[in-house]
Length: 113
Image 1 (cartoon, rainbow, N blue to C red):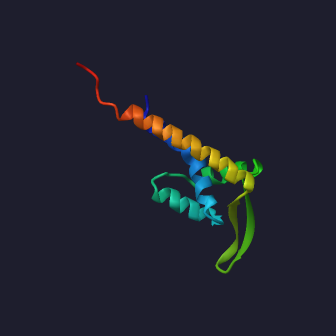
Image 2 (cartoon, one colour):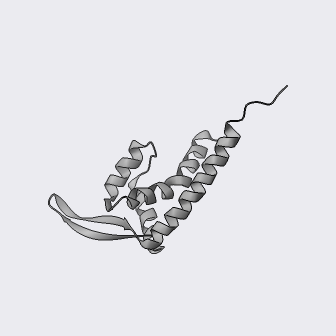
Image 3 (spheres, helix red, strand yellow):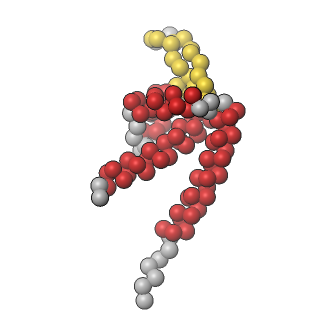
């Protein structure tokens, strides 16, 4: 079994949740999302982020607006929709349950006698 592949799959599994959390704090530019994710050691590239943002927009969870930039082309700033906020709330409840369950399993000591 390939450890790196398993690690990548684990990160992908929480990427959407993390992105929605970042966007939930207010309007945010994609490169700022990338910077925060990278800083948290969730390595993601633009080629992964932009298709995910498009899927989230098509699902009605996020929307964006164009903002003129003084240092280059206009930028897309993303924000959560009401549907997105409700979706994130439900994901957060699921995350809380999963982390609790995982902690119960991984914190048990070896039961060999």
